[in-house]
Structures are given as C-alpha cells and as structure tokens.
Image 1 (cartoon, rainbow, N blue to C red):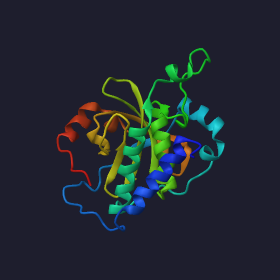
Image 2: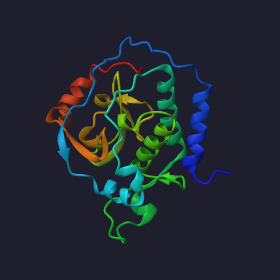
Image 3: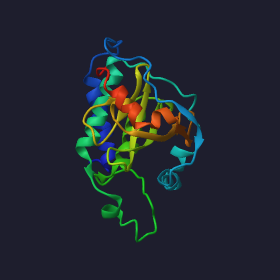
Image 4: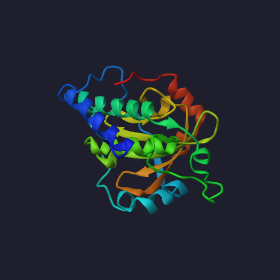
Length: 222
C-alpha cells in the first residue's frame, strides 16, 4: 500500500511510460523551435518557496547543473503529458486557507507536496516537477514559474524547457501549452542551474498585449 499520493503517482507514471514506444525524434511540423520566454536577471524569492525549503532543504539548496533544453522525443513527450494529466486528475483542488488555515498561523503562502490528495496550484506544480525528475527529466530544465492568471491573480505553474520551446504544465489547463499560448503574465521563475535562485521575465514577456498577439499564431502541440 502506498504511503503517499506522490509515491502512487510516481509509480503509475513510470508504468505508463514503460508501455510507450521507444524514444525517437518527434515530427516537428507546425511547431516553433524557438518559443522561449526571456528572463533579465535575479529577483526576489517567493515566500512560498522560502517556507517550502525549510521543510525540504535537500531539494532547494543545491545546484542542479547547467540549465539545458530537453530534446522532445516521443518518449519524453509522453512522459510529460501523462504526468501532467495524472496529477491534475488525482489531486483535488483546495485553497491554502481551507486546507491549512494559514491566516491563523500567520503564513502568507504555503507550498508543499499534496500527500493527502489535496492542494492548490503550488502543490500541483511542485509535485509535477518531482515526478518528472523521478521519470528522468533533468531538474535543470524544469522551472517553477510565477504568473498572473486570467483574473490577474498570482498563480504557480511548471515550465519545461525543450528544444521546441518553453512548455507549460498547469492545473487549470488540460493541455500542455507553449508559454505564450497561456495568455498569462509571466513574472518570475527558477534558474536552471540553481533552484533557489529566481529570475525575472523581461518586459516583453510580461506584456499581456504581446502575449495575446503571439497566441493568435499559436503552434500545434508536439
């Protein structure tokens, strides 16, 4: 019997991956090869990440190697979409206040693994990152990313950097999209070589009008 929902999802994800075809280059027709969200430099660390790191020191305070783009093959594309789907379908959405009563504890934002099967956007994103790393994706290609959603509210997603561009795993969306297809305002993300360093996105990336214009020429899914 599994001790945590994370362990169950990890095992199920790897089983699904093992059933897939062997890795081979995916057809590139219709997909933009350079769809990357640019950053400008170091910025403040989210309070949620700071508190998370007090509980998960090993995962936070160590370099993960040089940032790299993952070559998007049939195999790791399958891994990406299966883990995204499994987490979205198996974790029940709930706010931090309803879940942990954080206001009474004087906590502004709480990020953790949804081991009880419930969580908010932060918990979805960090679990997806862990499962992808366990499935063989390099952590240096996976960035927790802070955005403003369609309601202009703070939201955490996972960005996967590949040779086809920056792909977004989002608990509010059933599909894995390119960053500019989301319509979000991108604020900051983890650095590839150090998960405890956060980078600010450029003004162009943060401009919703530009994002909307780019979305009108959205590329196909890989």
